[in-house]
Image (cartoon, rainbow, N blue to C red; front, side, top):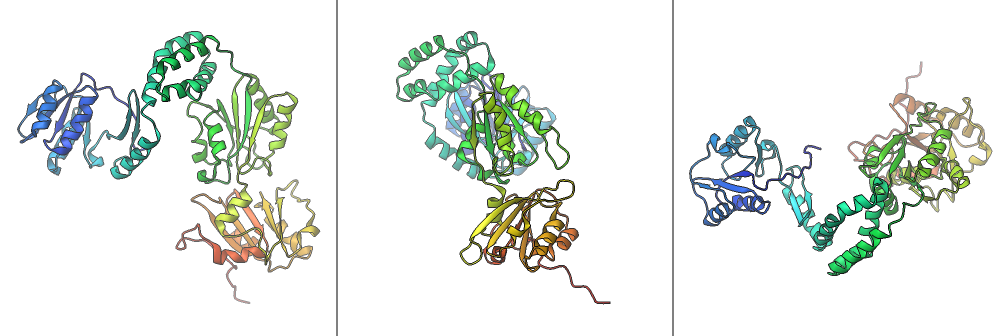
Length: 475
């Protein structure tokens, strides 16, 4: 973030607007509505701006800006079309540690005034960091259309009961559960219907009969292959609801950041041969946290039931009779193939697809190789980078043609998405020459040929596709 979103109380404070026209009037109006004493300074000040300043308890100074105009000022807004004046205001404010906003010149600002959706006392701010005020305004307009004005009355009702609820329900987690129930239930609906008195009475009844929070539960959620836009609505809803988040290295930071900000985050690692937390310990931790009454999010890359060990993690929960939910995610095979322009099945090339693990154990890979050589099927290997040479060697040894097309997808569906295309015979050498890092996915089959026609995600100018190792001169 370039700017920290921060709401500042200016009621009763002296604020200065440098400028006397329409833009200055608009900025002064926002300050006046927040209770500030507004002073305007400019060689000429519009009558409407003069009235606003005087009504707010401020002053009107009809001359050019001077640095001592900032004495005792909390915030100054420069709203002139003279860049030299705007820069002088910015420099003087920074020297005095006065907050400064210069309209349409973010490089001169220490604060930016966002577009706001005003449902007082509920305020929603939208900012582009000064890069595109028009975009911020359009987003604000969209929010205006979906957030009823009655949310302000709902906010007032919550504020009226806040101390009562804290006294009645001292436990933080139980209190949060209570408020979530109120804000998503019939009390809120009564407020939206204009029946605030009935809502107040119902909230009082709910508070008197408030029960302890139910036993904790676990949400096993698939985070998909990497692109946050591929999350399901249900996944996002539970991510925003959980008290504790257990995540590992295969979940992109951009996805983890979508979880509730005040949740507890526990990193459980799980890199190849280097597990920050062993699987048995993860299983035990899920049980422990749920028994403490917490809502636990187990966030896993891809789909938790496809090479994600999700079944193992749920087995212990089932034995302990701990409630859980499973939210499927887009598995890496589907996501990486789609973003690479490789359909896993195709009427002309493959009538079936098989998902295999390429994970090595004791430097060996015990797979039914003879079943993987049929030409009319696609084979997808998860976690196959370290065992790539074994995969290619064994498939050729069991009858798959050396020129069988093959693709290796690195960090699929993310901005670092990269695809290497070769064959069973050439892929090990291609990978040896490239800087390839996990996570990767390997696709073997005739469908890889379709990538040349169907690739859409990568920028063609930056696409990294290798089809053959370089020719070498014969000795």
